[in-house]
Length: 410
Image (tube, rainbow, N blue to C red; front, side, top):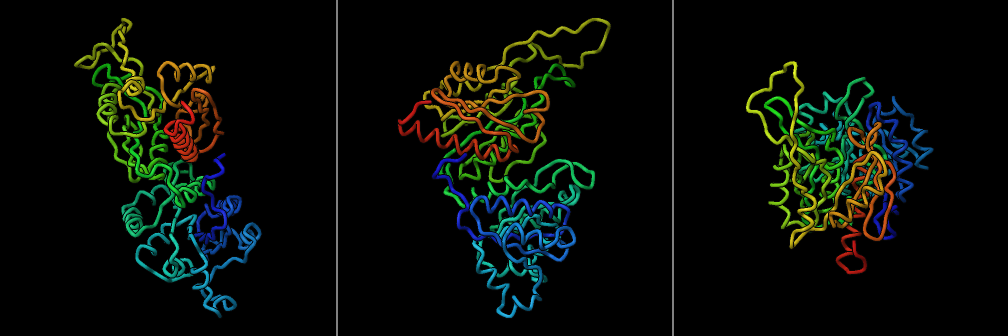
């Protein structure tokens, strides 16, 4: 749990606008989570959304009558849509359909939701949800870019299986993730004015022009950490191994392939950083020799002599002017014992340990972390990686402040 001074949504008035789409059913859980965080929630729905979830459901979980039309005579007798737009301290659209995104980008006011967005002075956030093919279309991305330029915050989407049977980006973020994004947007931002470097993903070590040694890291956790640091106001440099992931908004990305390339990029940037978070799964070994041409298969066993790769994390920790240094430990057994040994050996400030294998850690959408420092520990329970990353960034900020204040030593 966050500390007592952590920002919440207490006493915030949130106008939740629900668009049509199968993800509309998730908005009922979102109302509950928003209220759990202390917010007062009013729901407005499009006519299409009512085909997926009935207004009584949202009335029950919000405790308020649902608005769905500009032609509600009882409400509009007193220009109810203007009153509602003025009431809101934050307007959140979740799920946000491709159609509504397009109408907002072009300034339409052809239904209640679009009119509310034009009539309110409150900050607007939206959480898209749509088929992965729709999400990838240039028109949708151009409309989102227009809205971002106007100050609209975009939360997500997540990637995964979709109701249509396809797989990819376009899933509505889970309710906890959206709430965490709103809390982050409210501030204060824990890393404002700081420089943070994050390494993420695997490293690939070439055997020949077509083969390599690698590992199963997807890079998702490191990218989520970079996004969370940027959301908390940091200037973020992301050193990314070979992954197929979109660069988080507001993050400077440096692409590398091998452990030695990652070391070069990290050490080139490290002296200017306040925090270094080593989330990459850097290969411990590489082939001592790389064949210039493809090695042809024959009847004999192939023998590889491996050389040890540099220890990037330990090198950063030994710098004369080192950043606050955070490592990751992916273990298959005795997680805490091995992670604490790594913490002590490398003399870093904090380590985030997790169990991998058996569907945990690598290639999964969620994770759990055990945080260790010299005189303490904390368990971060299993959650989606973007939510977990936000919690991790909050703890890193707390630990760094404690160390700098001299009240604790990592």
